[in-house]
Image (cartoon, rainbow, N blue to C red):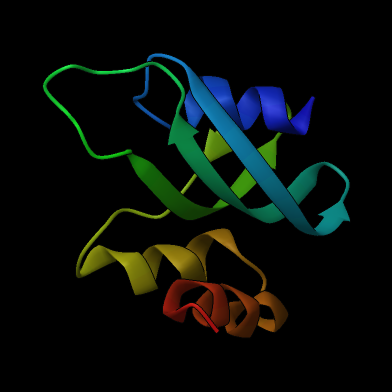
Length: 94
């Protein structure tokens, strides 16, 4: 169910395939990291498309931080303080 929600709501890909790492489940929230790729061949895009992002699921709604300057502020709004380091490490590829 978590992977399905992330695939349906977390990307703009037509046919995403996502791997999900769950950081923690605090009912009703699930916090984690997703890495998704496009599974359909897109003729105009010869290079494989991929996206990785932290997410928070509440009920059936997936939330993720905005890109750019807003990213860090959104992480602090969406995630408990004890998960900020985990998000930062994944963002930096550590």
